[in-house]
Image 1 (cartoon, helix red, strand yellow):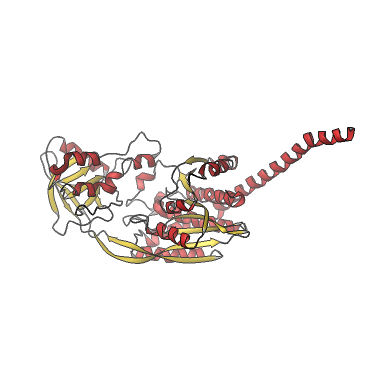
Image 2 (cartoon, rainbow, N blue to C red):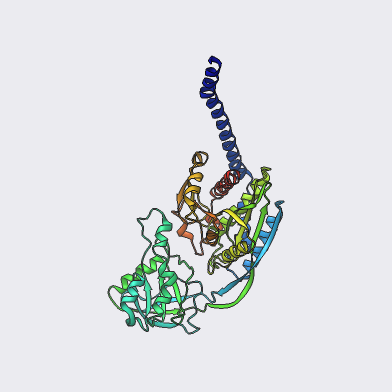
Length: 465
């Protein structure tokens, strides 16, 4: 009886201590490997040299253009140098929109400012005015609802959308989401009532002279009309003028849609050693707008995703699950690449455990947003947040929110989606502009982001969901 009591005492007191020591040792090993990931990225990363080539040697990579084709071939070659198990191109037909000649937008009859040019860019997918341009009175609105209220009185007018991003939003992506409907749907809504064109305040938190492009869409219920964005400073100027007088504006752009082109998603993977059928995707979109170099949007996300695979190979890490890098084509004005990838995955009956998208710039990492199938999301999210002690030393956290546009078509297949979140305060200074260049990207911040993504991939691979 005494021996049995002593055995119970040992199991009740000594065994938990021993098991706790084992647990602590495992946590220390995980923390050590996460540190190795960061050390590798901060000392040997190839992300910035890759981005430098994309930006300076290739430039803006609008889908359907020779620059987009060059980016496909360059990134395929770079992935092919990493010793991956597979590298391939996934065909996808993409739209080809051409900006045409430099845009002209001019106030022509103001008593206050006379005739003055405004800094402008055509919105992606916009039709042109034709070589002669058009001149019409301007009506300022703050919302799509304003357009509906004004209705037929807008016939023959240029509708000027002037709702700023909300500066009180600490998350600038929330501010962007609260204003971008006027850019995306503004032309279609105004055309419904007979407007002949639209001007849209640029989607940025900053007052400056830099116009921002971005996609717009049309409706089959109304003819397409020219759509252009003007800089925030010029939007403020035009608004002040309209408070005191009616003015006309001259618009000229020659943008047009061309025939669709064959392009590709670029894919490379490290095959899983024990669970190859479970796939973890990292990716960004390879296309960019034509007016800059597409450095933050989204060259940064592409090279960070490539760096995930490079650093795992450099660390001689052999994953249990398949780690796949996907560089999506045509996020900016069609999302063809993301949809084609998800369709192919469904057709091949592939199981995507998780997908991580980097499409918020190459700024200092803050963590990840997470999304997924409501049936499994809560349980999976709880598990993911248990890894916070390993990530918090690097200033990282998790939040609930969207994963990203290109990976969103994977959600119906049960994939857990993660959006890489860097600091957002400067992103919309550069987004969709001519100043989104390599000079705007800090190399250390870019590499920290790549390490952050790699750390999450490591934990997803080790523990699953």
